[in-house]
Image (cartoon, rainbow, N blue to C red):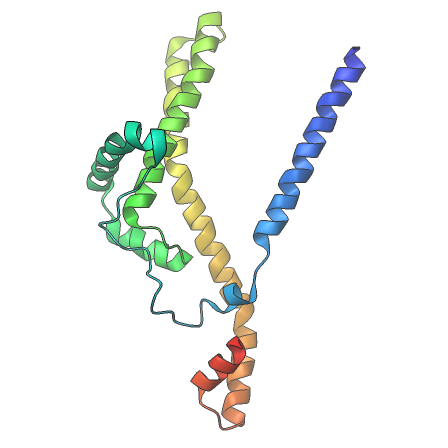
Length: 196
């Protein structure tokens, strides 16, 4: 296989992977009718994700091995970072059903994955002599911190997307309510008709 062939194979794999990811992204971004109305219709059965007692659950082999240490690390993260009320408010704003402890558990897992990735990159580079040891330590710490911050960034993005979706739907809801008022109908009847 020549060099041009291997470049072609890698380019084809990258293009295929990119197309698969693009297709998955488009499917994930599709908004259903129920999702469009969810911000406007109260649902008594769905919590806002503020259940403090819900501990993250791992199943199978990983659950037996990492369940207790993950719970301890999550409780320590909640104690250290605090701000559970603010995080619960942000979860409600995002329409997320996770609990505060589940978000903190994802931060702990992100920290561990970031640290592991940093070690995988820094140790071989340090052994080869690509950069000095202090730079390797900073790299590991930065990747760990990035992994811990990623769930918070994703939550902020979800809040922004949900609020933008609400702003886009506001004219439609206002028009339906105006028609209801003009037709002498109560607004809750309009919501029920709108859902059907």
